[in-house]
Length: 567
Image 1 (cartoon, rainbow, N blue to C red):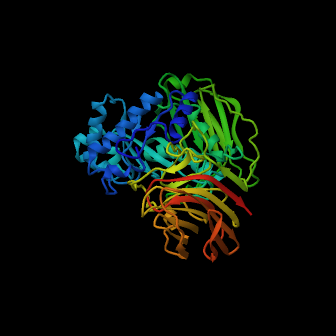
Image 2 (tube, one colour):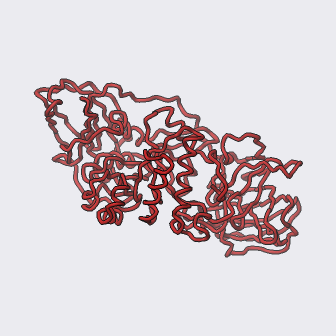
Image 3 (tube, rainbow, N blue to C red):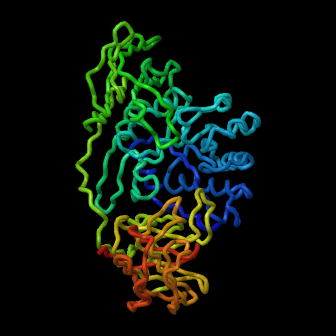
């Protein structure tokens, strides 16, 4: 909701993503967690809890819209990603959920550390009754006694976030098991699912697989995908961990789960220290050796005669890993079976016979971003609100139908957020969307611009932009600004502290103009409506980077006929 009276349940990619996931697995769990809130919720403060009834209304509206417009039932909702929680707000959120018939939606708190939420729940009986899951981020497979004392489900509600090479696969294999073995966590959620953003942004390739070239269609099914399958193909949410789990004598771990209807799945991992380091927290040293392990099946499982076997081995010497391979079933003799375990291996031993290694056609070849790229935004009914390949770092740039313009600028791209959000990170004070190839050096960028805010509005086109994400405030590059007061500036950074050139442009609000930025070597020049405005500004701090568009502040502004040519 960009504004207090603005409800639109068709923005972004998340609705599409959830529906596609439900097509493949109708029982998949859906969770909503705010990372940021619209600025109007805080009424000018970077804080969502001063008016908890408004914040609860915002969250509940999203949950209702998910069902009303997309037939999606959200199972859990969080409080605020890795930021403080507020007990009064949690209690009001539960009340508001129930008031709107959303009793089935459960609450996770606090998506940060185990404390202080655990001790607060022990001290506050009402709070204890309202929080269904204690979720911690990057717990390092460990929990705390207070969390255990609550008797609540414990989840690693965000984990992994590691480069998705072989070591990333080893990290994922280790924590999927040891989050329960060491910390009693019954769920581990990967951030992120698929690395589908420019790789040079923060946390590049920190997904279970990689699909970061929409212009080519190239993707890579990385090692963590197959590690995931060792658990997810042979269990389901609602299965129970058995208490007879733990560490192997010579290092590694094993877990066992059952559906309480006769099925059993055992997952074994022998990841070595250096081949299973996650991005955080630091991993204490440990040793793993090759070993023989015997597993004894008791109770109703004692009568099992054969079990299915799936196997992976991460090969760090010759890069010839075995990933999710079906082996011959193993015989159970006298209620037990034995395995010879090497290093950096994963075994799944299970009664489930439906496992299969999915296949896929060869992806299109990897290609760099096109050196010549044009976008006129002339899409009458766009499938998504955002234009392809643009990656908004601050602000929101949406397709827009400009009903007041009968000419060539009917369909444009518009920056639509007019108040700085309540942010998770220290976002920039300006809005910015990046596009292109991070390695580009010399280029020509041209774009039609339309300032909507009188007197104080402003827009820019930029090149060689070197930062995004949570460090976008410190982005350097070449930024060509024009302002509604008729001035222009050329700066070497987004914040505008390094001025390379400035003067009068004659640009004002309410009229279309064309900006063009030319960069070759250390020299940059700018053109306005086809005529030179400034020449040969010397660029010293920006060697390469993305192209970008944006605004001086959180303000309405439009862009059209974007074009870039890398030289």
